[in-house]
Length: 306
Image (cartoon, rainbow, N blue to C red; front, side, top):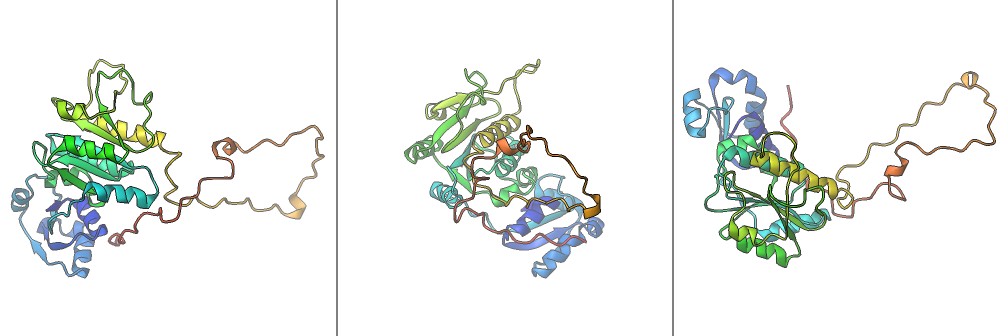
């Protein structure tokens, strides 16, 4: 089940097969756009009371709407590596090591999708489930990620090594900060559980450890916050490697002044033309051109807004 406005909308965008849409009658007017979209897709609409929907979803943040969907199709490590190859990018993977809080899982999935992660690995046991509350916390990002559950997380990390990935573990006691670490190239970032951090078998598979520098009185960060910071630090370092996913906006030439308005300026022989302020930010030859086939798979149109 997918509950909440944004998760339901993202499920529609991802073309997730659905069985029926559950709506609380008192909130139907505010949800009419999604109801109409479901009707156009011939998805049955079922009205339920708010308390019943809370019981079905397992939490009360459903916003009066939920989509009953077909079971999720999970991916393999090879699927994740294939997605990276399709985008022309070095593999970038998030690994969750026995997180316990569904909200932390959902938040990390949201950050992973925003950071361009190609897939997420997590253990099939001792891990918070992908419950409706985790889906809600991901704001629907879960619908656009390759999720790869594994029975043996340490063994999966060894498989990543065999495919040329380095494994970086989050560790508050690490000698190097994330900024001081090299996070370019094929990489997997491992975030440990809220209470115990990285497990011993997972720790032995890590090639490097990194921490987040802190100056305040608080000694640690929430697992989802810390993991998100590490993901975006890696994205910043990998920026020169990643192809441009969307075309840069075309330069807008200023309109020429009317002939009568052009002032006559005496040229200064000693003047030297200065480069535009951002010229030194572009590589020689202009901005990078994405390789063929690197474009992301088109998504379905979002439900039209009223």
